Length: 86
Image (cartoon, rainbow, N blue to C red; front, top):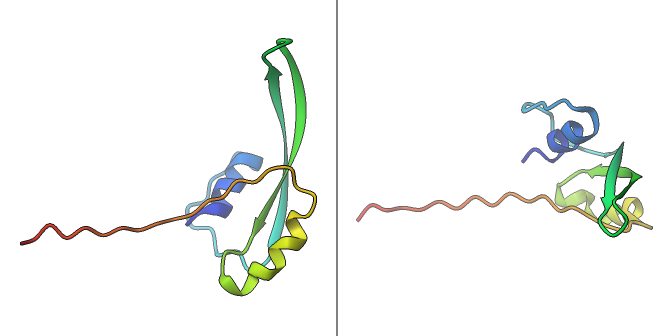
């Protein structure tokens, strides 16, 4: 689906549309500045992005990587095929 490619683009500024499937977990870090609208002041936040394998056999390991997380981003791919022939 390209979850690793999206993570790499966010953290490193590089996108590889031929990235191999993830078979373990990788942690990428990125600092991001956000403005507090009530004070109009900017504050830096360090994001740790865990890119975990998407195959079902690895799902039980995900709890280890997400422990203590305060947010999540889920990426999923759904393919829908329509047949319009009579």
